[in-house]
Amino acid sequence: MDTVALRDRIEGFVRRHELIPPGGEITCLVSGGPDSTCLWHALRALGYGVTALHVNHGLRGAESEEDARFCSERLDAVVVDGSGARTEDELRRVRYSFLTDRLRATGHTATDRVETVLYRLVSSGVPGAIKAKREDGVVRPLLEVWRDETEAYCRAEGLEFRIDSSNPDTKRGLIRDEILPRLRELHPAADKNLLRLAEERPSALDELLASAVGSKRLDLGGGLTAVREYDRVWLERAPVSLEGEVRWGPWRIESQLPGLKVRAWRAGDRLAGRSKKIQDVFVDAKVPRSERESWPLVVRGDEVVAVPGIVAAEGVSVERVGD
Image 1 (spheres, one colour):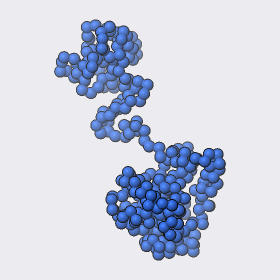
Image 2 (tube, one colour):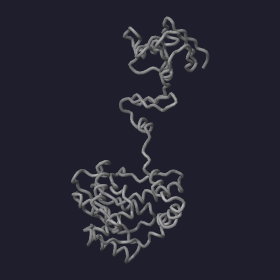
Image 3 (tube, helix red, strand yellow):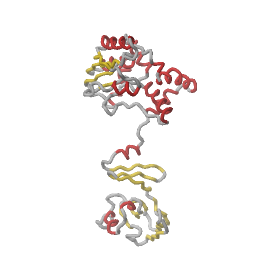
Image 4 (tube, helix red, strand yellow):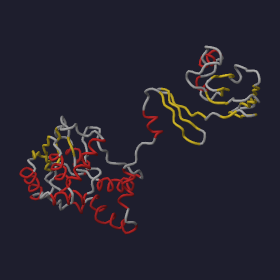
């Protein structure tokens, strides 16, 4: 195990996702297992100001007390009482309820992402994902590191770690010990292929719809373009060369003039040779706002030469043939 190379990978992930300011302070939520122990050690070696917190849920009696003692003595962790929770959701809520005034990190790995995808696919039909940064600011710097790599890292650095004996009895333990091994029998790249689901990024259309700032255009293929102007979104057909006849919605447009195209209205369009905006043309003609984006314009280059049904042009014939 090249521990320096692994730390470089972790640092690259941290920087790409802006998880921790350079040289910044971070509190690692540690269990004593190989993942959080690797996280604690690697971030310290990378020059971050690292402290540790261990939440003792007390679910395994003496074993829980040994975990707490290990984290306190080996990782210099502050140990807090997290008893009382029983379900996985309650345990998670309690675990994240401490030290909310500072930046915190967990040791979730690529392996956790794969297990989470499987569980959510079965339980909800949607793959879901573990985020690099939670809404409450908790960060996950190890999401590109596999669990077997964290164990190898700890061994290479001479770091002891604890193993939770209750893991096999959990839903995640079932996935880890029984389901994933069988999937690997079906295909050796099962883990990496499942990770692709966890790493699915928002599509370009998702990003276009996610903001109401400024304007943006997106080619959807098939002659369609999605357009957003601030908080308004519409679909627009790509420009079509006017060579003889073009059908555009209820309009039949004909011309033999060279260099003409038919396209949808765009903000800022003006009539050729005039200063009047097409938007004002629509207003004067009482065209409803909802119809303007689909109304055809006949253009030459960037100049609008005709607005079917409103502004005629010599050599261009227009007929509304139905809706």
